[in-house]
Length: 175
Ligand SMILES: CC(C)(COP(=O)(O)OP(=O)(O)OC[C@H]1O[C@@H](n2cnc3c(N)ncnc32)[C@H](O)[C@@H]1OP(=O)(O)O)[C@@H](O)C(=O)NCCC(=O)NCCS
Image (cartoon, rainbow, N blue to C red; front, side, top):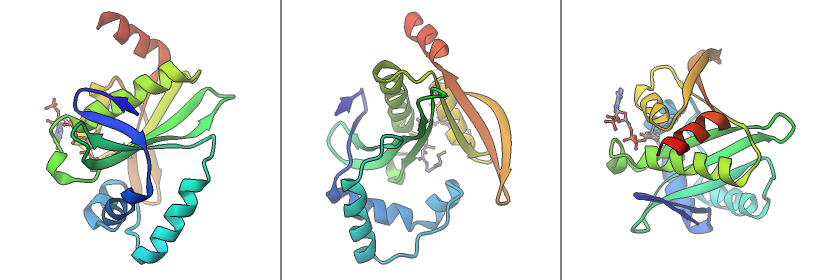
């Protein structure tokens, strides 16, 4: 469990399944994530969810985002971990709209970045976000990410962003 001023990052658990299902079947959230809306039933989702919780991959690390009061409001992760290239991809979703634009995303992302650079040997974290998702880009910028390119895939236009360990260290030294 990792605590910051607004949020707690913790391991995923079965009790998260209902909120995760609710968010993954939400058309607006799917659109913001350039993902298809899940059409799966909750009973099937729960079965898959339980199996995934049991099988942890070394290349993929998922966390729930809770408020400090213990309310589950979203998820974040780092995945596609390449030890040889020293890099991983980061993802975040604050699913509960009541917590948008209130600094929770920034707190979660900066907590995860701190965790990755302090607990692993990775030297670069990268991500992609829809070019139109200016709120997400602002959030990532506040956490030290900078744009480094663009990608068009499946008709979606993405902004690519990254942060290197030395940039993070410089910011840590200033704080
Ligand atoms: C993207 C997301 C993680 C950001 O988290 P958040 O808690 O809402 O964002 P924060 O409050 O930490 O920071 C957002 C910043 O963007 C600003 N902002 C809000 N809407 C904006 C817009 N349309 N354009 C530009 N900036 C915007 C906010 O004012 C804030 O900046 P400030 O603190 O300087 O005022 C969260 O909103 C979310 O998960 N949204 C739904 C799913 C999604 O977009 N997924 C894609 C992620 S790649």
